[in-house]
Image (cartoon, rainbow, N blue to C red; front, side):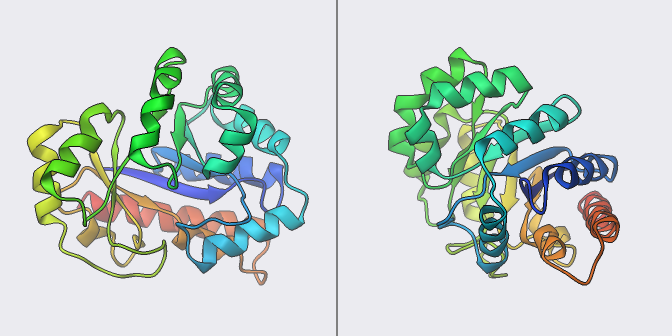
Length: 246
């Protein structure tokens, strides 16, 4: 069965909502939660996720909120922190990995951490038995792909196009998928531009998809009550999970 990773912004609009939403998404078929750490300059993300980041920060989000939410979600579903390098660098990777161990979080996705710099931190992730997700882009040639995926664990995050999340672009990924398969048995999940309309196409040749903006759009819809947001996001998750496994 092909897998679904779902991104949501932590603590937006509040911690209890995030917990309720995450557990509902699990029931709807989300296999792994990508719990977004609100940040002021989310360079890989489009306007939808950027807006949710900003609103969470304006609401007073802090790392303590992330940890509280994680402590209630991670025991029940596979959870990864998705954040940018600044807080990891400021607090130190061991600080976060110790918290991840405490709360049961299984690793991190850090899109602005270049592959060459991951080498410095991978021993720490191994020490705590946590995963630092590897990224491959459609612009990476075969040799670059081989280099990047040498240490890949859990899954390889295949960026569907050069750009930001949610922009809906499309590129032929067959060559880069073939290159990954040559050198790794690690599952490949496609992210960027995946929603209920594109999921069936995006999952071709890979083992799963990563969905973010499609969910966060509902988080930002002020016409919906909290209950309606959870219901609609869970419906989208269920629909995508069904489509990628048709």
